[in-house]
Amino acid sequence: MTTAAAALPVAVARPRPSSAGMARRVHDVWSMTRRSLVHISREPMQLSDVTLQPVLFTVLFVYIFGGGIPIPHGSYKDFVLAGMLALNLVTSTMGTAVGVSTDLHEGMIDRIRSLPMWRASVLVGRSVADLITSCLCALIVGVTGLAVGWRPAAGLAPIVGGFALVLLFTYALSWIATCVGLNSKSPESAASFGFIVLFPLAFISNAMIPTQHMPGWLQAVANWNPVSAVTAAARHLWGNPNPSAAVHAWPMQHPVVAAVGWSLLILAVAAPLAARLFRRRTIE
Amino acid sequence: MDRDMIEVEELTKSYGETQALAGVDFSVPAGRVLGLLGPNGAGKTTAVRVLTTLARPDGGRAAVAGVDVVRHPAEVRRHIGVAAQDATLDPLLTGRQNLVLVGELSAMTGHLAKERATELLARFELTDAANRVVKGYSGGMRRRLDVAASLMAHPPVLFLDEPTTGLDPASRQRVWEAVRQLLADGVTVLLTTQYLEEADALADRIVVIDRGRVVADGTPRELKAASRGARLEVSLAAPSPDAVATIAPLVNGAVQVSDGGRRLGAGVDLTPGLATSIVRALDGAGILVDNVEVRQPSLDDVFFALTGDHIDDGTADDPHDLGSDGVDRALEGART
Image 1 (cartoon, rainbow over the protein chains, first blue to last red):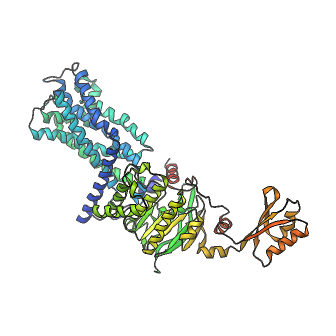
Image 2 (tube, chains in turn cyan, blue):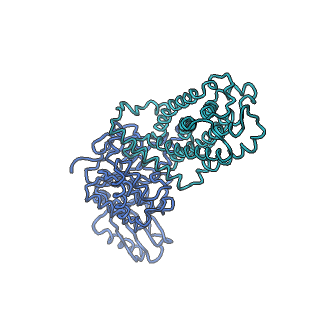
Image 3 (cartoon, each protein chain N blue to C red):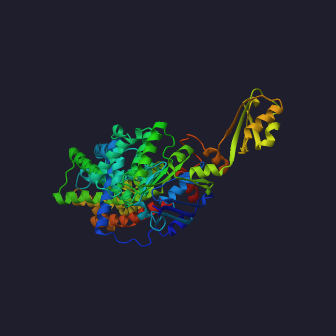
C-alpha cells in the first residue's frame, strides 16, 4: 500500500503557479491560519504552554537553579533567558503534532479535500498560526525575563535578531512536528513526540546549564545539538554570558551560522516530507 | 440538457479485502437528480468518494462535468459541492464561520462568502444558531449546515450522501425543499439514501446497488412495474391448521404466518380474480376470512426482491457502511 501510494503519479506535471495562483495560495493559507487562531481563542487553556508555562519555568529556573549553577562572567538569570526561550518554544511544537493529527481525525478534512483549494494550505496555515503563538510566547518570556532581572547588553537590532533566530528554528521544528502528526495513529500518540523527542532535545543542550558540567560523551552530543547552537546564538547576539564560546566544537564557535544552517536544513527536509506524507495520508 | 454531468463506467474499488465497488455503471444528465439506493455497505459512499476526488478508483472511469476525476481532480473540485456523511464541519467554528471558510476556500472573496453564508443560514433556518459553535449543534442542525456548506460556491453538480439520515421529519422536509429549489436552478444532484420514500420523492431516476454492483436502474415507476410480484395478506377469524396448505397452491413460495396463526402473508402474481380465488379456497376448507388484501409492490418490495435486504429505517449510524470511518479502518489495516 505504501509503496503503491508512493509510486502514484500524484503530481505528474505541476506547473509553476502564476502570480494569480500565488495570490490564491496566500488567500487559502490565510483562511486556514484564521481557522487555527479561532480554535485557539475557543480553548485558551490550550495556550497555557506558551503563556503560563514560560512564566513558571523562567521564575522557577532563575530562583531555584540560579543560585546553584555558577556562570563565568555573569549571572544565571542573564545566562538562562535564551535557554528559557528555547525550552518553551521547542516543547511548544508538540502542540503542532497534536493539532495536525486531530485535524486528520476529526477536522473537516474530507470537506477540505473536496474544495478547489491549495491543499498544502492545511499544513502551511497551521504552521503560520503556530508561528504567531510562538511570537506571543517569545514576548512573554522576554517580559518575564525583564521582570526577574534579565538584561541584554546589545542594541535593538541584535536583540530582535536573537528572538528571530529562535523563532526561525521553532518554525523549522514545527515542520518535523507536522510530519510526526501526519504519521501518528491518534492525537494521543502524537503527544508522545514531546516526551520522546522534544524534552531530551531541549535538555541535552546548553540551554539550562553550561555543557562543561556534563560527562564527556554527553558534551559532544550537546555541543552539536541544534538547540545549543540556537541558544548560544541568542546569548551571543544579546551580549549575555555565553560559556559555550569557550567550547571548540564548530557550531559553538559559529553559533549564528550554525543556528541558521540547522533551521534551513530542517525546513528543506521536513517541509517537502510533510507535503508528501499529507498526500499519502489522504489518498484512498 | 442531454449532456451527462456525472458519468460512471465499470468503476471498481477495493479497500483491502473488501470490494466496495465491483464494476458500477450509471450516469446523470444535467439538471436531474439520481437517487443512489442500497443497503448498508453496498458501496454508495465509496461511489460518492470516488466522484468527489476523495478516493481513487482501482479501475473504470468516472467523470464529473465532463472532467475525469482521476486525471484532473483539481478541475473536478471546481464544479462540485459535497455534503458527505462526516468529518466535513469544523466543530470549533460557529455555523457562520464554517460557511465563510468553505466559501473562501472555494475562491470566493470574504465579502461574497459572508453574503452567501447569511443567505444560506436563513434558507436552512439556522440564522438564530449562526454564531454558535457547531460542537453544540443537534444532529439535524449539523446535517442542514452540511448541506448549506455544499451549496456555498453555487456548484453545478452536487453530491448529497444520506443528507437526511437521522433527521426529524420537519428537518427532512426542509432539506427536500432545498433540493427541489436546486433543481429549479438547473443543478445536477446525486443523492444517496436509505429512504425509498426520499428517492421516490426527489429522484428522477434510481440506481439500486448491492455489494458493489448495480442491481436495478430506472425511474421509480419503472422499478415498481418491473416487479411483477404483488403481496397477499389474509386475516382469518380464527387460526386454522389447514389454512397454509389451502392457499399454498395459489401463491409464490412460502407462506408466512403471524399473529398466532391468524395472519397469512405471501408473494403472488397479479392475476385477475386473485382475491376471489383465495377466499373461495379458504371458504371451501371451512375457514372464515376477515380480510383479504392484495398490495401493489412498493419500492420497498422491489428493493427486497432485488437485494434480499430491507431498507433499514432511521439508523443514524451504519457500522457496515464504508463511511470514512470504515475507510480509515481499512486504510489502517492496509498499512500495518
